[in-house]
Length: 327
Image (spheres, one colour):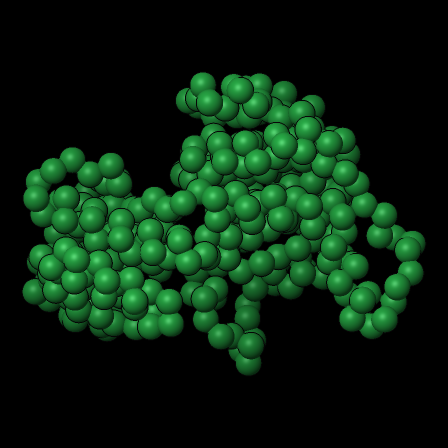
């Protein structure tokens, strides 16, 4: 099987691509850059293409189709960066990957604890030898009622982990899971907004749940609610989030994702002027932690992402059922 890999990273992915390509006898083509109309030609002769979170719009999808690409596998759980309708029209299959849920679950708990213990302020003060106490009194996890939106593999891992703190947990998902019911009570969104003083998001982004957390939803939440998002930025309406922070309705936020982050994260942009006004505003709040979509980033997850991307393409090639197939 021939697989062309875009956004190939020498510093972390290379060892795993070489390992699994040798194991599965896969011929690799590589490009360190993200796929574009200018470099799409490199995939000619490769029926399978592996990407990360870079936009694949209708124009680029049609170009890949013309080059003979049969399937695009994204080395991510989310696939909202791919135009699925365009893929359907031209007959290109799309797959995602799974990886250990522990990486994102661990990170989520870290953001929870950092948010309620005001760690951003503490670390900023420590840098300038300000060791005073006013303004940094934190709160304790057992005193929170936590709402978990989305009980897939990551959501379930978060619920399992925070159950050890002794906090009350409510969960929301269209499909209830018996494992979750050992630790949490399923509830409607309305109930979670009313009862929970911390809410964490673990859903894929779809057209149906775009801006799930909007001004109306925030208004229904408890005063001082803590919001955590390690899923997709588009789940939260950024303007409504900023308004909620400025009014004090939202007490703190831990964000590993933001809206419209494509083309920014995973690159060295320190010398660039970024047209990301909302990012600058969010960074300026003392009670907001923003990290650059790093929750997934562990050695185990990188290995899993590469392995499962290759395996998904192999299953397609063999005509076998693929649990990672999106379309």
